[in-house]
Amino acid sequence: MTTQRARGGRVTIHDLARVAGVSVSTVSKALNDNGRMAAETRARIKRMAAEIGFRPNALARGLLSSRSFTIGLLTNDTYGRFTLPVMAGISDALVDHGVSVFLCAIEDDPALGKVHVDAMLDKQVDGIIATGKRIDRSLPVDLAGLPVPVVYAFTAGASDSVTFTADDAQGAALATAWLKKLGRRRLVHITGPEDFVSVRERASAFASEAGEGGSVRYGVWSESWGHQAVADLWSAGGPLPDGIFCGNDQIARGVVDALRERGVKVPEDVSVIGFDNWEILAEQTRPPLTTIDMNLKELGREAGLMVLALAEGRPAEPGLRKLPCKLVVRQSCGGAQTN
Image 1: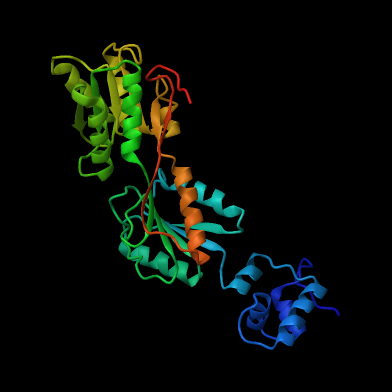
Image 2: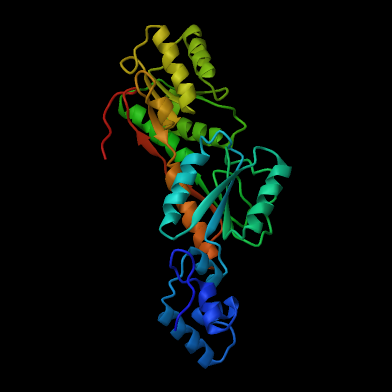
């Protein structure tokens, strides 16, 4: 038996259907052992598949299983600070399963969001992962009731969905406990806007861990705010802090610069810890910045495996799943990390 092979010598599912004299749909049913057909027909198609050397590639597997082996990633984080490490984790998780990921950035435009969602559905994606810039805001597009599973990572999800985020409170407690372990007792938390859930959770955990020796200052996510907060502290009079935990690495860099301008040594006089582990910023701070890593790549990996499981029909309990953060010790706080 001979068959005309596709370019490159690979036998395709269409070749098998043509040789067997049946439709691609019938081949799919026969090889997946589903659908109604005579046992003789099913056996004949399987025998022919072996005889002509049919080996399903990604496209053929999609035709066989009604899957496209693609996942859509939807985000309004156009800068990519959070989305890129999440996407790296998703890709790492799915590459061994033959699944590819394509990214659609929607900014904060509902119309653009709908266009991209419709395009994903037209491409018959197996699922969608939605990610963003903060856990307490949903993307500006309705993802409820879609014919494919939707998993959320670092953005607010529907109540009946699976949502992954970093454990902000655990990360803040980790940073504060490290400062106390270093002998720091007059602690200040300089952070972002109080209307962020992540800010409130970190501040609450800091206050609980720091006790009476801690205070919180809310501001904006910028180096200039970190610089201004130090100026305010040093001009206020009274005891000065010996440990400062910042709500992100940008604030921390502003804090370190402002301390240096005042002749305050970091970490000898004041230990400083950031949050995010934005490596390009943390490693270039002088001294390099100790910080909390939100494990965004691992968060993406978990989201990728979850959407794959849902696409394959496996059940999952809905709800918010918080992944632990980790402390990355550099030179800005002193001490050495022990595991």
